[in-house]
Image 1: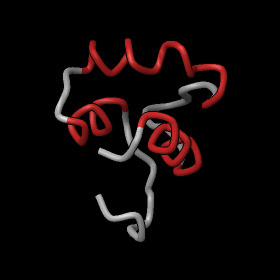
Image 2: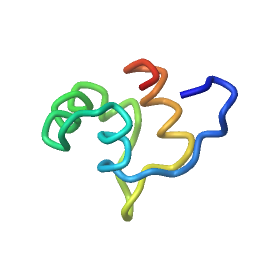
Image 3: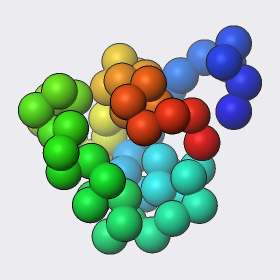
Length: 60
């Protein structure tokens, strides 16, 4: 993913797909950073939360 590309709201499944991992693996990856990124509300993370995930885990 381009660093210049605009980050949009995404579901857990969409983010897991971007990393080419299963949803179960993604949930394990975010467990230690859940407090940093905040609650998963509705059916997607906000663009700000997605950016934080990418910053903490590295871009897919």
